[in-house]
Length: 489
Ligand SMILES: *Cc1c(COP(=O)(O)O)cnc(C)c1O
Image (cartoon, rainbow, N blue to C red; front, side, top):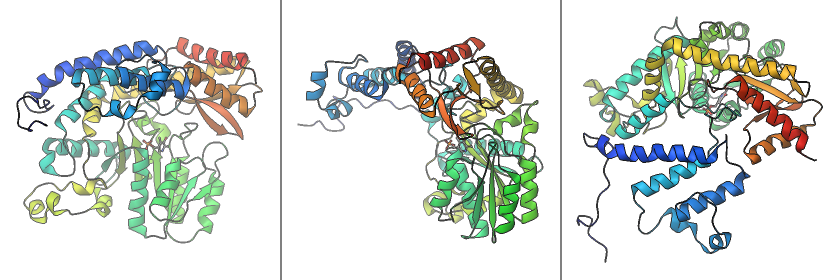
């Protein structure tokens, strides 16, 4: 016989918010922190060894037994993991948090480890993660003012301040908060389509992020015309030829910090070509945008302010936990196309009576206050602190490039423009390069990415960890050479 929902034998779990929320959270956060530490210690390296099967087996064992040791495989065969995922009787908050957080930390590819450097997968700052806890506890939803009074005011202030960085001479700079570069690029194409109509032709470099092509597909726009980028940046002669040939409304998307090499397209020249041909310019600065905070490097983004839309992604070079994307514009009026009314969220009479209308600030409805961790980071570090972090990882990349250049066993693709370094064992085949990367993953030694450039496959190190030391870089290269030498193929 099931007990009534009002019976005293069933205790309702405490909530995270309200005056009592902090006291309910404190012991649970303690459990989480202990589990994070235990899991990271048990892992010991940048990622768990053994590859996908071992990792999945350890996770199943953790769910089954509440441990992270791989169990008796016979037992596993007879056991239905669905009961571990959704048991009839719950295990309680302490056990569930300890088991799952330990298992996840133990099995993580941890970007805070200096040898985890494959992707634009940032090690989040502790202060940003702490701010995210508050966002979860308060749970403001950014789709209406009555769910997020202060959070919406904060979002307005911070988005305007950040848009003033990309568009200092803009009329009324503003930015939308997005889930990242992908959504920002989608919104850039959407706003351009709403402005120019469905025949809008997108033109991008061969170095553009794949999300530009997907956005065109998603929005029912013509397939983007791709301009060659033989040296990692858009070929200007080819771009001029394409813009001369094409008829109808055009959107050029340039990249400030490509995903593969960190290269920055020549923005002033591209902006000039757009002016000459009446094309609209979008700049995807998902990676390179935070160069704006660096006194010594912001000149690399000259011309960014000439873009009608700019993608920023602070969960890359901004050290935020995902998600922390933005789409900046020089004038808030450019965002009008997103206006939308849902009577329960922004009724006309509520808006007339002065309640801010937030629904048009995203195509999403419920939306996390991702602005809080961003605001905390900007305030805590300031422009100088952020600029130092940017400079630091760029310098780390320069250091790695130096080491590669000095090592006769390795070839360097090019000096890093940002914080990405491509290298490969001298004389290796593409197959060897690919296998070297997988060996490093399987052994849990290092997480490196891969990228094609100059018709060859390279190992890619994306350096986003400001704590990485020269010794870490030596170790990274030693692993690369070691695996290469010890593997028979
Ligand atoms: C990472 C990246 C994106 C996509 O960003 P997400 O946050 O992963 O959606 C877009 N453009 C560039 C240049 C990127 O490096």
